[in-house]
Amino acid sequence: QVRLVESGGGSVQAGGSLRLSCAVFGYTYTSYCMGWFRQVPGAEREGVAAIDSDGSTNYADSVKGRFTISEDNAKRILYLQMNSLKPEDTAMYYCAADWDRCGLPAESLMTAIQNLGVIWTHLGKWGQGTQVTVSS
Image (tube, rainbow, N blue to C red; front, side, top):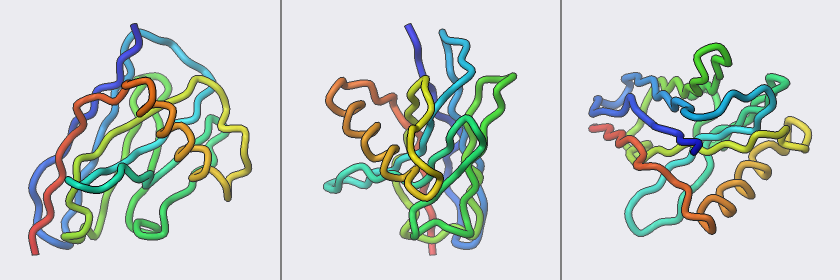
């Protein structure tokens, strides 16, 4: 069974950095459409970053210029480098993946990720996530 396990969260002060990891277990992939999401209590889960297996990336406006998504295929790990963190970045962070291309151009990858998130919620596939807390 394929599992995605998030790690790397923690508590930092505003302006600090963290790197989140999402390790893929149980599947060797070549093509993918992967994304990072976050959720705060009482709110819906939102996509923050997306990556296609051709290397295309896209980001939510709230994190553009501060977050970088990347993928190490040899290690089967998805990363999210988060710099210049703000208190509003405080959330539980999750990853999700589909083992096929996103099927949309780079500028629309966030739409693909949002659709993936809906499917994952419907199927109950979310992992435990990793908590990020940013203090002011």
